[in-house]
Each structure stands twice: as C-alpha cells, then as structure tokens.
Length: 400
Image (cartoon, rainbow, N blue to C red; front, side, top):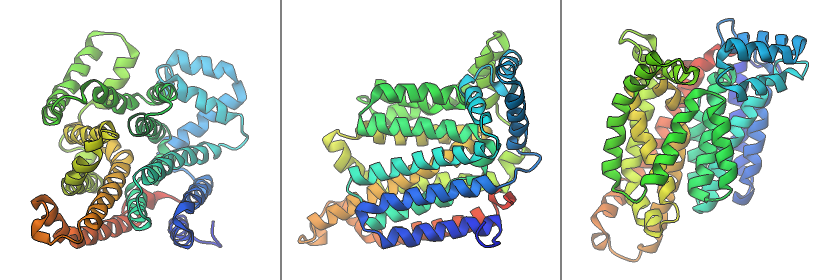
C-alpha cells in the first residue's frame, strides 16, 4: 500500500504516521490525528485480501448473492437463518446496504472506520472530560492500538462492530449522560448485529439498577451469576425452540481444556492483557474513588468499567466469550483507566506538592513513589504487545 510495503509494514507505517502527526499538533487538535489514523486503517482494510478460512471470505459470497438477487436473498437468509441473520437482522440489513456497492471490500473498510472511529471518539471524549494531558492521552491511545485486534475486526466484521457500538453507547450513557434515547437505539442495533452484543448491554442496565449498592457485593454477585449463567442459557436452549436463545447459547458455550482457544498462545496473551488491566485498576482505583466518585459525576461510568472487568474474569471459563471481550473491550478499558487515573494522580501531586511526603495520605504516598515504575511498566508492556501484534497475532495473516 505504501510504495510496495507489505500489509504488516503498512500497518506499522500508519501507526508511525499517527505518532508523528499527534506530537506535531497542539493538544486541542489531537482529534485530527485520530481521524487520520482511522482513515488510513480503513484504507489498509480496503486493500487486505481475506484468507479462505476467514468469515470475510464467506461474507463476500453472501454479498454477491445479495447484489444479484436483491431482497429475495434477504428473505432467504431470514427464513433459513444463515449466519444467524434471522436472529441478527441488523447485520443482515448492514450486509444488504454494503452489497449496493460494486466492491465487496467496502465491507471491511466501512467496518474498520466505524469501529476505530467510535473507539477513538470514546477516548477523545474521556480525555476532554477529565482534562487528560497530551502524554497520558498518547500512552492510553498506544495501549489501545497495541492490544486491539485489527485483523479480527476486519475479517470477522459483526463481533467487533457490535461491541464497539455497545461500548460507545455505554460511555455516552454512563459518563456523558447525554442522548440516552440514541444510546438505547444503539444498544438495540448492537444486540441485533451480533448476539454477544447483549452482554455489555446487560452490564449497563445492571449498573443503572445497582449503582447505589455496595460495589464489592455486586462484583462478587456478578461473578457468581456468570458461573451459573452459561449453564442456565444452555438449559433454556435445550428446552425451548427460541432461535435467539439458541444463538446466545452458542456464543456462551465453553470449550474443552484442549481447545486452541484455551491452550493457545493467543489465549494466554489475552489473559496477560486482563491481568495487566486489573493491575492498572489496582493502581488507579485510589484516585478514581477520591475524584470521580466523590463528585458522583462519573461514578456510574467507572462502576461500569469495574463490573465489566469482573464480568470478563468470569468469562475465562467460557473461553469464546473471554477472547472476544479481551480483543474488543479490554483495550479501551485499559486505555481509559490508565490515562484518567494517571491524570488524577498528576493533578493530586500538583495540589499537594508543597506538602512533605509524610503528610500525604498513605495510599497516595505509596503510589507517588511507584509512579515512575508504573509509567515504565505501562510503556514496556505496550511496546511488547505491539511487537506481538505485528509478529505473532492474527495480524500476521494480513496480506494484499
């Protein structure tokens, strides 16, 4: 794409271009670098060629059918529930819309632009809302770019799209607390794009109904509910003829201990991302409680992020769901927690810099001493994961 560069080399070039443009622009114009990165990633997606085993290859065939047969093909996929389109009709209409273009490659291109555009929008809005400085914002964005699975988003289409829409609506609903009706519409679109989209939506409404209760109790209750929830869904699927319940059961089914999802390198890498994000939460939780929760302006939003992490811990037993959350939810949660939490810490350091360290709260004292180490570990982990993203993840399969 870039003067004969390979697909992976093109991805790296795009990230380098983003970094250069980001640091050349003033902080208030950082959104330009996000838009540029989104567009360039969309161009990269347009030029990628799907492998025969990818969902995208099968979707190309379906797009050809829709282009040739029109609404008659829609009726057929609804009746036969192909690709679960009978259940997830939003996805079917999305595919039908793309089929109006003469080039199938617009499917992954538009999907990548929507997904990365929404995630960048969330990160940018959060940075603006909490006055995150340029360094913390950059580190958060790089963590997101390094741990988000570009190839799976472009080749799988529906899962990444569903999760991105659900998470963006959850941020707008719980942090910004605006346009609630549009957020509800977004939740519906996410659920009927892919059945797994209902899971983050359930957590949103759990937050709304329980945000005034003790958070530790709710976190533990959520984990216990998840452990039995998969079996309950399987029971409903076996005893009813509801196609929607059956589709959810298929997504929540656990895989054997010998499955590639649970024993492969990719699963272990996703597990390290979860552990590292939990480590970030442990470090910044002191500042989140002392700042956001104290004013109750963003308590619902941070409760959503916390419950989501506990939910993901429980999904380890349902490896398919865990992998999906790890690839499309954890990266943006890690970015938000780090950049907001570290900014809160920086603000508190500025407020108390005239006081001797021993007069500061003990929780703050320890974290001030560990701040350089935290910055180093975060930078190192992001760099290592970016290397893995390019050399060992599914991005390795991308080609022109």
